[in-house]
Image (cartoon, rainbow, N blue to C red; front, top):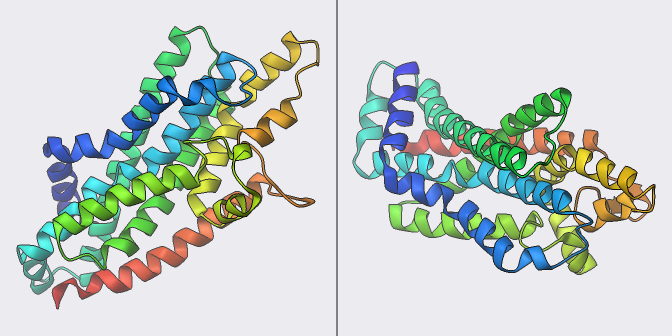
Length: 279
């Protein structure tokens, strides 16, 4: 399994086109923010605005960066390579695991690199990075959000039979996920019904947790600089760093539980579907 895992990851990083399209959604978000979104909403301070953008980029990256890696599954199916693997002495569950784990590892690497790049930008602009505890939480969330993203994508790709179809589906998933995570438009600007739909979308909880970690220091700085006049709770709710369903607060524990449960459900479904590759 390790050999197949390494092979899949190497194929992904050798394909410069796949790498580019994996990062395309991130580049679009940054461009849209620079052109339009930065002028909208109650950001409070530039530091809060940048931390919100970084959280959204990382949330989207946890899904889109593994889309290119999943294309290897389609390629192997079309070229009958998968049949050769399943005909080998290697256990089928190990082959299936390699097909699912390689996009996860590739996604974690790309999301981590995106985090480091954005962190350099944050420091260069004079803003504060999260505390040491926050950094550990951040990288833990990168792993968890990529697990969920990989599980969901694995389920979708099990129904795809061509690279062209997967590219189309991948583009739709990348666009819709950004919208449903409240990355393109601050959540407070959307109707209540749509906010409820977003709450049911597991990656939305990744975005919310990223915001809670990355926006904590900027919000505290704004609060103390204004002598308590900045309503940080209102800003968090407006920008999707917190969410109340009526009188019920969606706590970080609830969001983590939703991500874990979604990961288990979609991984089981993905594994069952992908084991049919040998047929």
